[in-house]
Image (cartoon, rainbow, N blue to C red):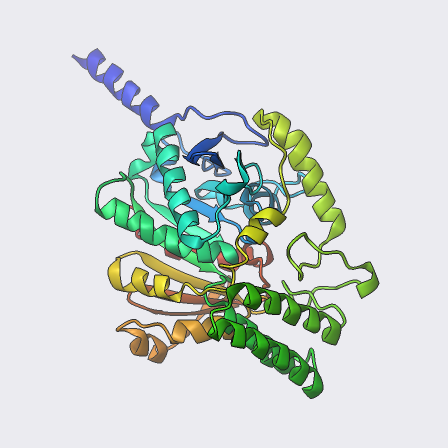
Length: 437
């Protein structure tokens, strides 16, 4: 009887601790694959199992939360940018990152929408042209992921996103929650974190001129010039002329580049090159590329990573086709979706913003948050903001009430996980603190 108990216990121990992962690229166990989310539409995902620097003998990866990362663009790759430029184990030079989310969490990168990164379509008509379709595709991707690794069905999961990824994440979270509630998907979704997110595009655009003026980046004449362009964008939005609004958004950004002599939209304190040396991403008027870094990333993804993962598809850095197909949806707000998340779900809703970001500047984010149609919004607005301290250093500020929490992140631009990993780490611990309760 004693030996039977030992065998049973050992079997249970091995079942709970070991994972059937692959070597992948870099250290740690990984898994990856494709999900056909619609006919001719295929999404690629890449999972890193949690890999802490030190592990106890009874360490179990399924006792750590799962974080999903969605990149922005739309059309920028999570498996490339998010992984190697922001929060994965290795940077683009294949050096170990000082702090990686994989130290503490299982991390799932998804190349989304279809046509982004290693994801692909068989027919041009399969590209997504609206946010609802993107969200539906993501829910199908998660169904496929759980079919591959069903052990994650009970693991607490949180969607985290950046920029346009936040716009996609909000509706993704709502549809997923509904499916979970209706028991059409077996999962444990707990929350969503919207980082520097394109939730109310016009609020962002209208914040640009005041933000630049108040940070000393332009003078009064510059303010007038930029604001005039921004108001043209607003006029198109008010008329629901969405393609025209996207064109005026691009025009306004180019006005800013002229007035500021080429400011970095992702971090206003970033060093920039003269306009004569400026290069643009296809379909996106405003991204000031760090050419050497992007060359390294493109080369890495299409050689070493592609070979290690055994993939045939070419990895795209920024899909202009994805962006162009969504140009009629680009300037549409999804504040109504965030309101539904607050009013109809029990999910944790986190909003975080980098103080040095211009493209989704903090004042614009605060505007849409404070105007949410939520019964507790007045209480939330009147709640005291407290300091976010790490090792006795103020890394930002927090305001919370009920299931809405907003983080102001100091010394950070658009790429919060890269720019301030200390604040990000503490925020993630907060987000996942009730995961297994």
